[in-house]
View 1: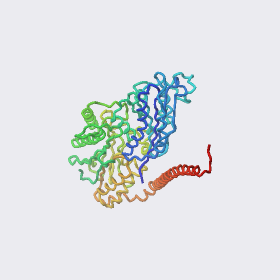
View 2: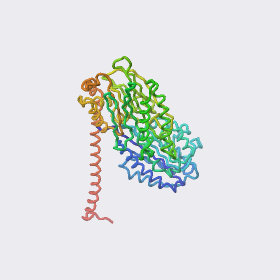
View 3: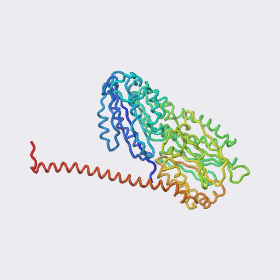
View 4: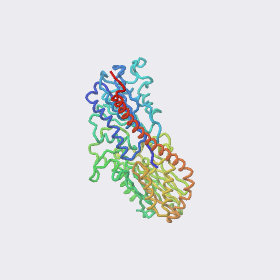
Length: 223
Length: 345
């Protein structure tokens, strides 16, 4: 009889605004590579994975990009749907966004509210954010949100914090990895939310192999 | 090495890459006090490498061995009461870990900002015991721990958990902990903000005292499987002694665990001196235990694994048929066109 099995879900939030142009290709490479690297680390420890799914959310700025502010994929089951996952990531183009800040918190809220796999023995629910920008406050233009703004978003940062601590994700299985500058609201999240790791930089620029391995180990193993 | 019957082992999941330290199993004849302890280097929280004794090792590997060395030294020189053991040990661990972190990581912390990542993180679970004065087969225990390595007392018809995992979880249910794999909220590390928990018990032999890292129990199908694993392998050893019991346990754990495993065990009381008696005392209830708590789940798990295997075979067969369908459709279309049955503009 085998030991316990893992179900792993990953949601990748990628800032696709124009300022990301110089680094978007590297972020896309890292997104596509992440699955293989995580699998390798988990297999090294003989952790049996039943199902691994990946979903991608490309975000910009609802106040500037209107209906182009969000591209969201379904969950792709890997490795079976590897080519669909790759096509979606390849199709992301860094464009628009206007000036900083961007709608990173809305992307994170949508990620938290994903249809996480609730079955299996052991689980990992992972959100990864790549961005080079600060975020709009969630309460910006409250009561007069743009037409394309997603429905039922948290009213403010405190409510988003409640979402992270609340019922959408497993308290013990969730992990949030943030590749972002030290800026609102990413630093607050890294300092105050449980189970987060932030690498302060522009979307992961300059990340050393040692730190990357540390992140993978913190996701794959018990901490 | 103690003269008390027992065993200890450490088993790397990947040979040569394990982070658990070799367990301690010590007997201090001077003050008639015994100690068993395990240390689980936390590779998830402390994988950053450092140079240790001439080789590059993960911080977690170093941490487990450092903690073992500190505990061994402390135990061998400690003369106070069993209840006072933890206090001085905690301070000693904090001092040594801070000094070693400064030496091993001269450039300081990495840029990562997280409470999940620590310098030199390890669990520790240690169990001290001494005979109660003037009483036959009665013992005073002091359990010390930080993290999710556990101490148990295996009694003839009962298993007593002597520790409480330091995990960020709303409730203490062992099944929830097994499934959830919750992050720890306390472990030994160089940051210094940790505590050594302590609990004291009086207990009566016959019993086996054991300490184990989470690799021993966190990958089994359910919490009762750990008790059954201990009793079943003892039964299989057929009075062959502690070393055979340990060997059978290691074989099973190597097959089941997705982690390094380490364990130390001592058997106390008159029954422990006779291996046949020990086996009878601790395994006579095995058939009933198996039928009630183990077999129903095992049978279901086997069914699920068979179905999973069939599912994979069906998916492979479907994939092959789908490819053949594409090929055949193209071939027949080509034949159709070249046969002249259809004319196209």
